[in-house]
Image 1: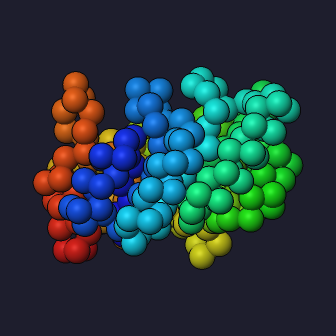
Image 2: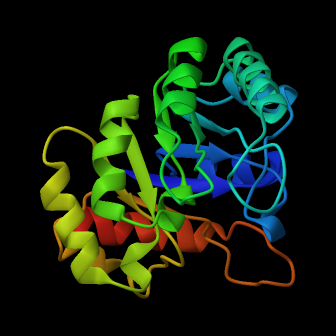
Length: 217
């Protein structure tokens, strides 16, 4: 399963045409992704036939949100669901660096869609406990960039997760290093497939190259 993270409608269509099997739909690459317009999800829902995972992140910066920001996120999540999102990706942490389990659980129950814990996970003070908290909150998947800095920890998290929650590696994954992850037993990868960090566009050939790595695994 190849998930491509896209930051415009044009990139989303490029990724799908190149063979992407799931889309994470965001805007504003330079700040790590923010909530996209619900109109993007509506347009994609009526144009493509792969799962759409919509980002819910109201602003750049840290992942510690005020009650008003949580309320705004809930409203955004419901709007994205109405537009056709199949799942949502979000996260929130406490000032002490722990997953905000009550708020995350409330969000997940409120939107009524499968939810992915995004790379707020990588900011947690204790990733091992964070994984347990993510399961407790009701997340179905964790997106993490730990593979780029600590592959042993990524492998340990995969083992700890078992069948309870999916671990989705991301963070700088390209066809040039993707075999590192397939050799660890991962069969789904997350990538922006961006090769030119000036133009910031999905590269169709890179999408196809990533798919080729997964197909050989």
